[in-house]
Amino acid sequence: MKERLGVKSNRPLADFLPTLTIAAKNLATEMTNYNVEENNLHGEKSITDEHVLNNTTIRNMLGQRGIKPEELPPAEDLKKLERKVKQQNKKLIKEAGKLP
Image (tube, rainbow, N blue to C red; front, side):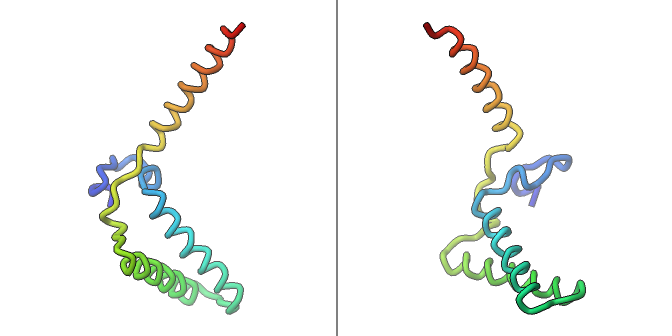
């Protein structure tokens, strides 16, 4: 996945995942959390099976809507965005000091 998105091996994949992919992963995880409590699941195997099922369900739903997560373009580099926001904040503070 890193190679497909052009992510260097030393960088976290999550910094480049499209928001739709992150939301889908979060939904599958929350479904797992809910079902673990609701169905009183215990043990690594049963919880893992539940999580795999939820991920498969979400992937199938996306596919039904014509969305293929592996074909989504990468998001903008999170670290670059953080630096950009920091620079803009500094610039705003500097310019605000010049106001009458």
